[in-house]
Image (cartoon, rainbow, N blue to C red; front, side, top):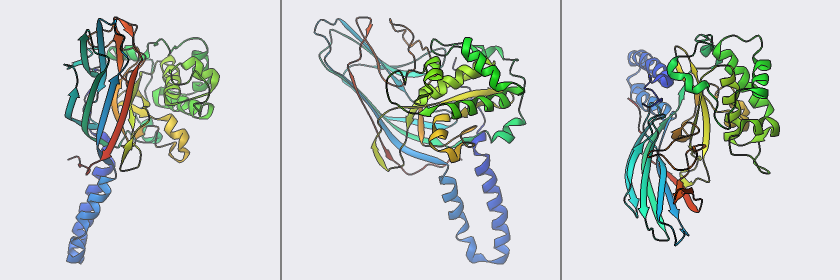
Amino acid sequence: MSVYPSRPRDGYRRIHILMEHGMRHLNAVLAASMCFLLFSPITLTVQAAQHARSFEFTYEATLKNIPSTAHTVRIWIPIASSNPHQTVKIIRRVASVPAQITQDPVFGNRMLYAVIHHPSSTVSLKVIYAVTRYEYSRGDFRTLMSYNRDPAQVPVSLVRFVEPDRLVPTGGIIAQIAEENTQGKEGEVEKAYALYNYVFHNMRYDKSGTGWGRGDAIWACDAKHGNCTDFHSLFMALARAEKIPTRFDIGFPLPQADQGTIPGYHCWAEFYVQGLGWTPVDISEAWQNPSKHDFFFGSLDPNRVLFSTGRDLTLAPKQDGPPVNYFVYPYVEVDGKPFDSVEKKFSFRNLATVQRH
């Protein structure tokens, strides 16, 4: 069963309020001037459009230099799915080999799976999507504080999200830092905000050197720099040490341009607020845009697309190798061993924005 549960479309309360306000204003204007009536609906539509983004997204993977001695090649690539914050439609699938869509039973991630016996030297797969991604917000810190609860009471269904992952431990120095930074704080929201600020002030977005990008919370704690994976792995570890359920989301960022290629992935995290649900944080984006520090605690912009959730993943069907650290790029095995000779290309072009009704 998927742990990405259905949830109310709460991220659009601002749009809803705006529309209600617009209608009240419209009634007043009707009495004063029929001329203004002609322009008010257009204004409201433009304002609503700022909170969504529609685009075509193309995911391409090509395996090259497959050993001539290979007997069996297995390929898994993540498949984006609709959820309360994005609508996804597969426009076209192009594959040089037969492939099927499967789903893992733990996190509910979908994937395109292919198995090839006695393969040729090159195998290619491409998936083209139409996506509409919505900005959403659980509210700012003050709003979220109205849901503040004791994080020690973890629902049974969320126990997995307070447990450690291989690179996201919850003991030792992680537990010490978490305790120091949440001392005197009460409830899951206040503690999560303190840990959000700890990562924000103690990490820098810097991909120099080696070691970054694996999502190793201990490495991030020591190095104090890295990419989005490292920022959010450290946050996850600290939050889980405080018994706050936290999960890892990964997909791709959307540049502000109308079209182009995307060089790599983007990830963020969510922590669970009892009485409200999963609540997002994007600390690396906040670090690069400090004026949005408060926004990215509880809110996400629409310039992204989610592909998978979770760490230490078991794919479907199960891979022969160890659990997959995170799943956004193709995972390939040749005769049961991981194979890295995969070319990847991701591109997008904007479409007319589709409004949520």
